[in-house]
Image 1: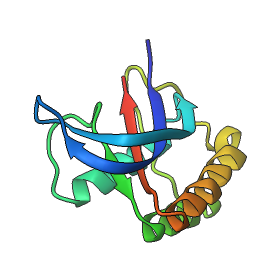
Image 2 (image 1 turned 90 degrees about the vertical axis):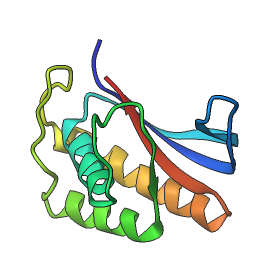
Image 3 (image 1 turned 180 degrees about the vertical axis):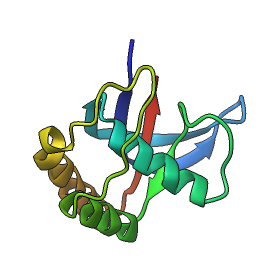
Image 4 (image 1 turned 45 degrees about the vertical axis):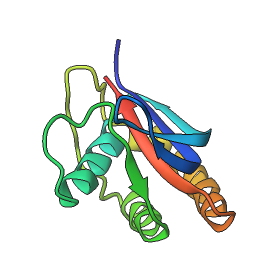
Length: 122
C-alpha cells in the first residue's frame, strides 16, 4: 500500500452513467511511486482551483502554464515538503530527471491536441 501517482494524455471527455468524468482516449505518460512533494504540489494546485476534501483519486488538469510553473519549482528546489502515512519520504533529487521528462512529454502531448491530467491513489 502507498502513494501511486499517474499522468495521462487524454481526449474525448465525457460523463459516464455514474456521473463520473472519463475519457475516450487515455494514455499514461507518467507514473511515480511515493513522490510526496509532487503530490503536495498537485494538491495545492487542485485546492487553488476551489476544490475541497480528500485529494485522492481525483483528476487535476495541467495546462502549459501549470507545467511551466512545475518546472520552475522543480529546478528551483521549491517543491513543497509533504507528508502522509502512505507517502514515503521526500526524494526530489531521485525524481528530478523523471519529472522533467514528464514535463517535456506532457508539453508535446498538449501541442498534439491532448489534455494532461494528474491523478493519484493512496
